Each structure stands twice: as structure tokens, then as C-alpha cells.
Image 1 (cartoon, helix red, strand yellow):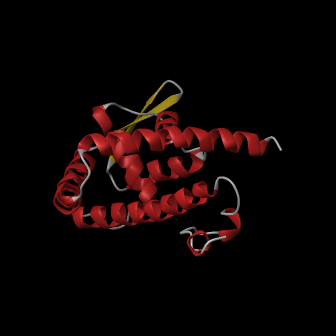
Image 2 (cartoon, one colour; image 1 turned 90 degrees about the vertical axis):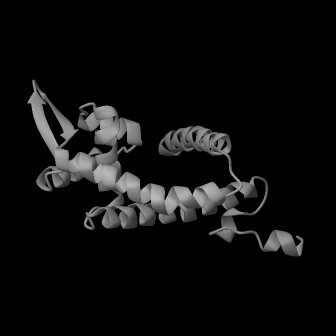
Length: 171
């Protein structure tokens, strides 16, 4: 093994041996990017005026605000690809208590919408995001089309991980 091979940038060297070692390098990049993204969301939301929300709370708030359409718990879980509905339900209750969402029972279903306060917070987040993140991204050597390609690849890879999860669950 060459010196370069022995110094691969991975989080778990034992997972980077043999064929397919590049997946370990990708996974480490994903771990680092995921943690940075979660930290960013919390700092951005804090700068927007609401410092006590978790990354999941923020994702749920933005998803409920998306396109101004009311959402059910199952809708939010499906779009965010969250299997543990209780964590999203907890986030919804927390956002309701903070008066960032409203809820309405229709038959057996509960539908959620952003309140005026929640919509204003999403707009404040958007402004902080534009100032602090988008201006920096514009300086990188990545076009909008290249970012879209990366996003498409990440969505496709998420399908591979979902399929692998199902396979592992059957072992």
C-alpha cells in the first residue's frame, strides 16, 4: 500500500480497506458536511432571532412553511425522509408552543401551517442565509448548475443508503 493510500481521509480506517474504499471517504465528507450544515442552521436561526431551535426543529419549520401549503406529520416525515415520526411530532409540538406554527384538525388528521410569526422568522432566516452563506458561495468556483448536479447526486445516493438499510434490516 502506498503512503498516499495509507493516508486516506476517512473517519474509520477499518472501513476504507479494499475495493470501494472511496465510499468511506465520501461518508466522512458527508459526516463533516452534515455536522457543519446542522451547526450552520442553528447559528443562522439564532441570528434570525430564535436561538433555541434544534436542526430538526428548523427543518420542520421550513418544510411546513414551504409553498404555503398545510402539512400533516406524515407529509413532513416523508419529505424530510425521517423514519422516527415521534421526533418530528415533538418538533411540531415545540414549534406550536413557540407560536411559530398553527394546527387544525380535519377529521382524523392534524394539519400544520406557519403562523405569521413563523413565516416572519423564515424570512429573517432567508435574509441571514443570503448575507452570510450565499455571498460566500458566489465566490466559490461552483455554478448554480453544478450545485444542482451535486444535489441530484446526493438524492440518488440517499436512495442507495435507504436500500442498503432495508437489506441490512433483513439480515
